[in-house]
Image: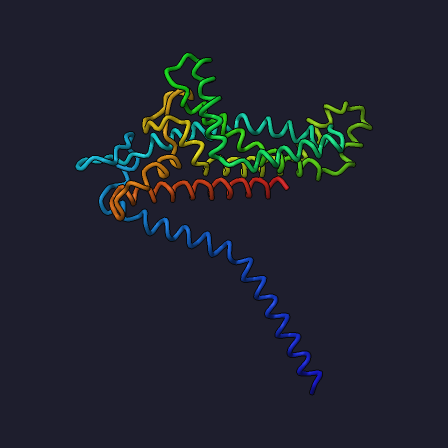
Length: 295
């Protein structure tokens, strides 16, 4: 009888531990679903007053009493410029740095570099925004002879710096996980060390590099403060990286504090947030499928 009760207690305890871990594992799923539901609840009422075509307009002028315009094309274009330019700089720089740290640097140098990368990752975005405003913007203005250095190029430079720690860390982990036998086989066949790195090690770590791209892009897409400080805040379609602009995150941050609760403008800002969220989720799903297929 006592053995049966003891076995029942152990079973109950084990089941309780199992459900406790299941609860903790499910928090992320519940949180994501709740956020999506909240954003859609606040954003979808926009379509009661405006059409989907108005959302795809080329002008964002939401403060007019009559005839307000809620076209997000200028905001989306500025976001695209900033993301693409920053990742074009951060990805090759980050992968090269990861190759050096993983394959070339000595133990002490590797530790030194990784510590500084972690320090860079811990910098508040507002501090990097101040640096871009005080140093990078005047430099861009002087080099390109512009009336103002607050451009999408300036934002892209600071965003690439912010994405570097993520790209370097994830890529370096992927490169270090490539089996040593790959390197030895390549060197045994007569390949140089540089050829081994570029033609054997890096292709073998491509899944991790793709993950680095995904995480870096997510970091850049969601950045707000630094972007808000240096893009110029002009809600027009940028003609080039040297133009001012206002990305989607900067628009939400600059206008949410002044908008009337429940208004069409209020719903439009939440709809922009929903679009950003689905863009990020879409990027993650695409990269996960690509990574799974290649593995």
